[in-house]
Length: 454
Image 1 (tube, rainbow, N blue to C red):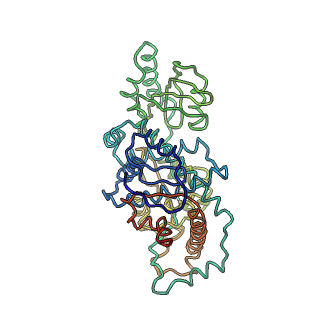
Image 2: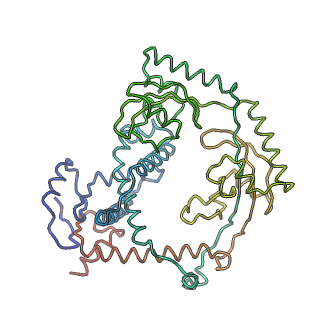
Image 3: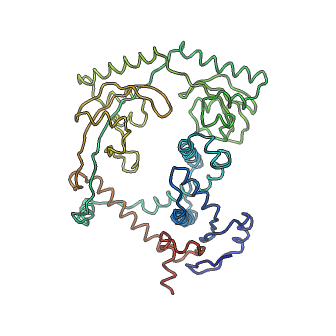
């Protein structure tokens, strides 16, 4: 085995070598405390990096290893401080990442070809890493929970910039939206109900549920798996779905029921305490010309009320918008790339291109006429936009950009606190890094102490 770089004193426990052997010795690339990091762990996270559309760049593994070491150190302290994360939160994060990777890969089948394994297998493999990442984030939040920033500190941070180094702020928009999807009548829904009920009868007559799910289900996430959703608890699904799943016995098939996603039938596979494994078939009702005419009429009526100032935009959004994320935020869109700041100022290049094309032609305070749109899931509807403000490109200044510099100053203070914490912990933590990675610039923070001791 190649030599390792020892950063802090101590003998590695015998059981670590035993654990490594049990892992079928692919290669140990680092050790931190009682944690070993295998080459396969590193390669798995690199595969995720590639699947997100990033270019092949083996040098990125240095940064991935740095993050793994950081997470291990945080997790180690979290165990001491009894800091944990809820299993439901882990499941939600796994599912969110899988949906993203499926989308980036161009479908579940293409993702599975790339990974050379099923999505269910892959979810089981990445779950421990995601759990560790969530615990690390929670530990970071615990370390920095008492950090606050004062206006004086914000000004001091701003003054630390040289005038010629102040960033250029691009055009930013504050945009509200009211999103409306058509609602089908009971009669319009009936044919979709009948379609899935016919599938239910085929299952009842002995046909294979999994085969029918693969053939007919309109849930792209589970259909390739025969409708299998894996194990979930009462909080993981919408209430109508949960009610059906937890009242049936293993092997039983539900009657047709409806959720916000469409019509379902489900079959329980196994029950383990407060978790159930089930598979389902989904049929999504499709809009009709009549339903589109109705929602267009409703959108036009709301638009007239807005431009005649009979109702304020924020009230209309709370009453009529089908966008749950902005509905109770006065209809205002939040900058998705900066969820911690919860800012409604969105750079022009980060707006949905279709929204930008409309907003860029509007005057501040103007409300757009209803526009037909199609969302990411393929659902059609109408959207009304409100341009609350538009800030032209400018050199950053404290008057216009105070909120940004407050966030920057806060993050700077947090980073300094975390750096101090890491410095203290690394001195007393046993770390070894394989010599293949000791030249990585990203790992200098882990190797500098040995150089100092020499």
